[in-house]
Image (cartoon, rainbow over all chains, first blue to last red; front, side):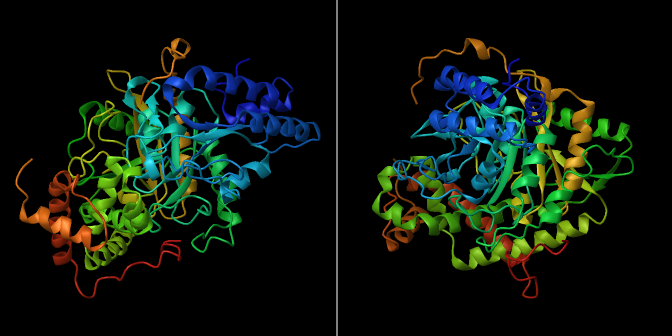
Length: 473
Length: 64
């Protein structure tokens, strides 16, 4: 029995029935990484010795009767999170030799459950970018078409999940960085409500917009990981998680969606969407309607400036974080991220405050919309995975992340899950957005859709023929 | 390389004021910065003095 594409829930059952063991599963995953990752570049640092130690510990815990759903489950950790004793590069040259001395909060939660860390996963440099074409650690390739980007910034996590190189992963999302690669690689990713998951030990990009969240191949697995990491952290002053909310998140996964109201946004979420993507979203909503949900048209013009506000806030806050290094070590940054960071020094303090005021306006506007509906559905990306090397525009009419970044501004929970494929065989993602702290309904709708469809059962072609030779950056 | 524009001179001046050298990327930055500044001016005109102040993000969003 191969464990490569089993879900965490299936693994837990297989462990309970003694059909698989964490040691053999970890060994299989490490073998796949060794064989496939030289081309995919989903990992920056693989930690095989540590993984085998954790797998043996998990095996012993299971033998003692542990029934934790994450015990012995192989996970990947975005290389933005600290793992004690392991280098944490943030995808940069600047931190290439930085060894963390303490686990990030969410990493500690994983280890407390008995999860097995396979290593640190590739990302766009300092998480500031949408493609994961990393100048220092290699472009992370999309398993569905290796000439395309994985999406970013949590691209290593998404590519590894799509290729069966891990079962669960941790990502971060400041302007779409969980949902973009989830959509591009055909997996599931949840950006929780702002503050629901501690960010302690994750290198920051923009304090006002950074979110930590789970990634997996099924909605159920995402819900399980979310419930485990979305707990209070007294050392993170922005963390507003509660044990009750975390436990509630998975409560309705098996409920139907009869009577739920699905908001269909207008401008700025409907312009210039690729026709195949638009058709897939329409079909997905039709599936939910057939299950008894009701479609409601929404006037979303109040979110028209959200993308601009996100750009100004991220650039300003990231500029503040990086100013000293930009002055002292500019040559150690890739050119694209130097450009991104330089925007922060070209807007004024007044601009930044106005962008934050727009954030407050957007939060209020969205609250009003959620009086009319239970969730809102959009495409995650206006078009499928881009060819490696294609520039990503920053204009609100054409930006690749323009459908996802508004919900970083509002702090709303937002899930991306597969809802089809284009003619080139590339995955299409659907975004389900909910009220603040209502991950429960978002996950309920996602799970209901997933039960009715089989998109997440497809696997990238030719994984067994991937060359083992390294590919130059 | 095109002649430095007024905008590019401004980009360079602002960067240098912070001790940053961006001569090699200033030309590429120009159109994006011009667009962002223009959109932020529109936003500034839209906001009213009595509009909500920035959120205190340590607090849960109101609908919690």
